[in-house]
Length: 255
Image 1: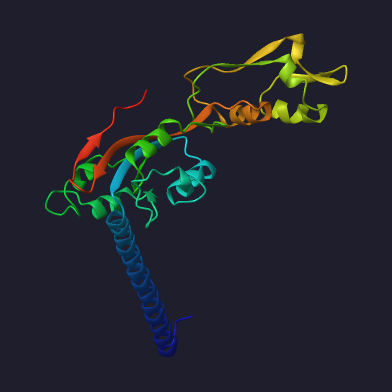
Image 2 (image 1 turned 135 degrees about the vertical axis):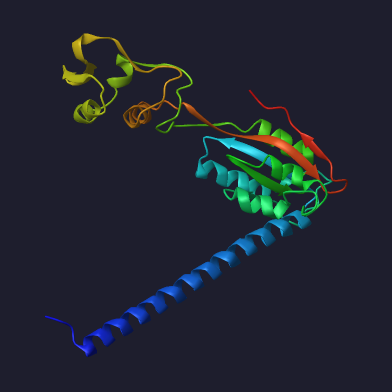
């Protein structure tokens, strides 16, 4: 049945109104996004203004629960009494990561647009799993803190195993027999014998993973059940920028 003129006009009006609403919504979203980016850049620059030095750092095996402690340390939390006398404690340190392009804009990509002398040198190497720390803590304190920072944790799927792991009969028999089906689904060759969990065939051990090979989801779950931690959360310092003279010191890459 052909549409009447009234139907056509209503359809056209509905289409125009819908497009107008979508257009307005997208415009507001774009405006909020621009404002958010601008505010982020300003926040980074305010932190640079409030602190004496900026560190560029890299990280591996990021874990939010461990990284929270790092943030608190430099915000002047429970570890504030560890600062040296040359610390200007009137401001809190700030850490920024996860928005490399915006950090590059905040620092400046070239000598012409850098926010302060030589900050563009940090911007040039700001890529990958990195972040920046703005702080007044003495260099000795900061560098010793990160040098000693190493927290073991469970590996996630896709992680390359740093060593081979072989499970023993003693490890599996500590688990209740109710977990046998779950272990089997994860690929662990186990059975119930004499009321305890054992390897199939009476074997005394079983190789779970090989060194240098990527870990699967199933392997990682088994590692958690066995309490074996193969990942280490670390933060390595790449370089340090000093506000006083604009100097940039690069640190040797750790093994």
